Length: 259
Length: 347
Image (cartoon, rainbow over all chains, first blue to last red; front, side):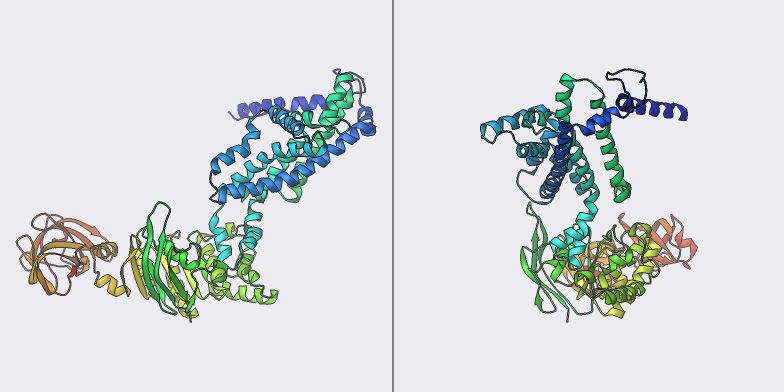
């Protein structure tokens, strides 16, 4: 029974990780084409990726966008969740659905709609409208996790704080925020990954010379098909892993998740 | 000077339910005052209005002569102990207790000293660095109490604070809470649905029903002289006998009970505590009844007897009572003194 369980787990894990392994294989394979088994181990594609001005500019833009998205979507998503759960706002249900809709809608639709909006309103495509697009699709991820922790939040903790002399703002800072932090952090993590990985929305909104990494990779793939793409993907994967590990080490996802 | 005076306090919930309906109360300084009633009677809502967590729709709340009605909770200077303790899970015991002092910008050295004193007061030392989740229910209760008293509150409000504890611990905490109240001389407003708890601890009790005060008085008064069927029924075990009054007698099915005072003739109900009913040999009392059930309670036996006409009556007999009278199916006579029955207002 136990052996069967472990083997099923192993299979699922292999299914999930195999593509990543293949990417890794190609990234270190010195051949200029995708081949298996690799003929050796080299860092040439990594060097090419890191020294490519286009790729580095795109990587920089993606990182900046990701951080900006986290800041804006994290703040907006948290505040919106608080407003939706705590206030007596009319039409709260409908508003919640509206805010969360980008998760359900095909992202390509959201991207196309934003593209049309940018064109019709005369704003045009620029990094700011790109950031706005990323915020629109990332905010629901923040809201989902924050709404979840808020739904389980014991309001009497805030009342206890108020009764002990805390103003509403102090009660929020001293009690509410520290306790919903795991949800906010998890949501921000999602927001970063959604932005960093974003393809459909970016596709419509990037302006020439201002490409994000996924778009730059896509454009590169159309003409070349070598290990640079695999190296870029590997760097992205490592970045995501480092992010999760970093948060786990410094703030401790698990310890907070237990509260 | 921190008596609490409620006048005409009303709370209407959305949907029109009058959770609290024009309550007038005057709680003396240093008094241990209980709000007692079944769930939904408005006792917790009343307490929450005193604390400032709910705004009354009408009426005023004075504490120490000062109008608190529209002050936010943080400016009322009260201590509150919540039913679920509401300890901050991300803070240690010491930090929990110090919270109110920190909000009052008390200097750090003072904070540490007062936290130590408060924890000593509730007999909880040596656990300062623990988190609430590492404490037992009784210990969490003590932290909640320490956190509430450390700020020298004008009034201490308790919302069923012992409800989650087991019976033994609850009893121990009852004694401690009462001792603490005496030592600190605090005005204490205590909400509970447990009549025994209210009877043991309070100076005065307000029994609430459907947003109103059904009866207000000292525990003995409430227990011995309930004015309504509701109060008689809610506080302790009670027999309610219905008959026709004429003068000093209440006529029932072929027998009569004496009454403490003459009542106007007509239908009438009396309340009679089971411990007032004395058992005797058949034919020696007011009426003969048949024992249907006898429950051994340890210190006494609780009997369920059937009166002529089939009405059931409870009697609490000392365990030394003649065993022949306690067996199911046995016949026994019942008697009580004229001052034992309590005539009830028509409800």
